Image (cartoon, rainbow, N blue to C red):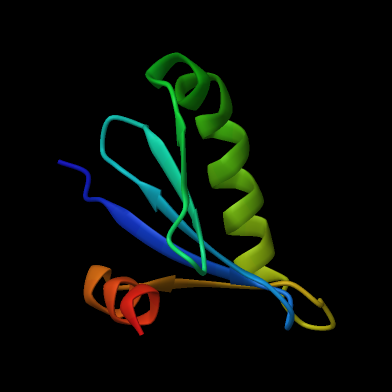
Length: 82
């Protein structure tokens, strides 16, 4: 059974929060909490690419302007509310 995963993506100027659920649906949020939902079909088409991009970025963060970190649901909610 897969779990819902939460990611924080930032470049020093802007932050995006990404939620990927076990069905493959994706929700993107900006720092104000505005949401973009990817349909199940869109998410299914993009899931492979998103997971590989995240895996490669997490492994190769050195020297990158963009930081990607996996965070907890509680941390994401705290940052979005505060």
